[in-house]
Length: 114
Image 1 (cartoon, rainbow, N blue to C red):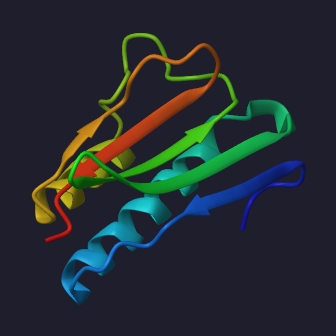
Image 2 (image 1 turned 90 degrees about the horizontal axis):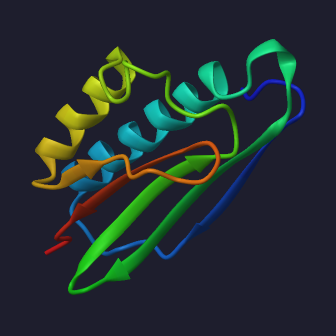
């Protein structure tokens, strides 16, 4: 459940993958959306969490982004939720990154669906 005032947008073209990869990706997205809901909008502020998925360069890009407060300085990608997400990314043979964005945070997983 997302807090009041927080919207979820999904724009994804599902890749054709086996059940183990699909399960790991679903758990990863769930963890990242939960992290955004918990940390991106402190004090009850509203905003948007976006889930994106699309083929990219022979692989697949799966991203979760928000327009909240961004990563905590000094912590960055070191929180438990992101460590879980990184472990799930490893299960699909993917690379997890969190590129700098103008506002909020963004976590990307790139992997080969084949």
